[in-house]
Image 1 (cartoon, rainbow, N blue to C red):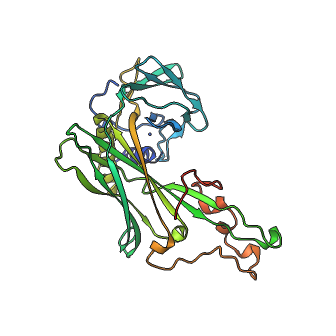
Image 2: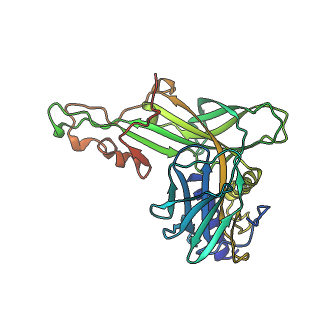
Image 3: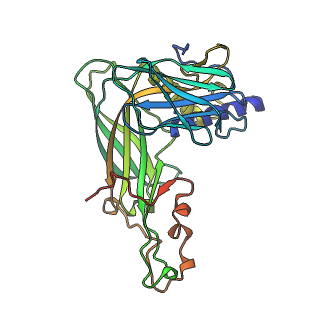
Length: 358
């Protein structure tokens, strides 16, 4: 296999992970050719919840790094009602829409204008069905990241499908948010004031794609493993998991199935063909240009569950515990700064509106 082919495969994998973390003329989702440097990547998710709607516009990189953001596009969601909803460009190819949501019964498409070219997605209708998720968790001592057993937090959903036999296709996203108190530092006053705690968020198993096809099953209840995470001192204070269930179209489900296949084959980098996954977005004036990514419309339901240190089967040491005899600079950096603890993850000192526990 050539060096360029190896790089191309890495680009496919990185692109797949990029979509899983973060979001035509094509009726069938195929593997099409090699990924090339500078190939356009567009991903957007438009939901029926009044929340921040986001579209990412970027271009692939041959190095296998994450796609490079494109900040100069004009991004708009189109509705079959005739309405147009323009997005605002933030930075690094991220575009947001606030104050608008998908309405049941309508269909939506994404329009991206870039460098004089117009890119359009296939219209997708808002799904009407969703399912009930009952969350639970376990702490199990098993193999996970290495060849040695470790304690692993495992999240499950007992999912109950609606009574109707109409097709339903589901995808889940999972995010953790945990409390991290900073150390009381003597140099800030006597007695030292209590610093505001950190609320740190991250995606659990970003390369895991949870899908369920309920179109051909007579079973209306299924227990699904949604995610795993190593147990560390993040669990010594309340640790919340937010699960978003996305009811999606059959076409979107098939797209994510293809992405999942690419990711599952990465165990041996040389076992898969150097082929990206095409989606439902196309160049209006050039049918030969392959656009990576997808614009999906989803009905959304959010469920949460939390743990405390009482649930953890072993003692967790608090490295930030205040000791009067400890000099301020002796505390680890993660005890003196939210940014140091977060290490690039999202964080804030303001508790989320839903942050409530017994």
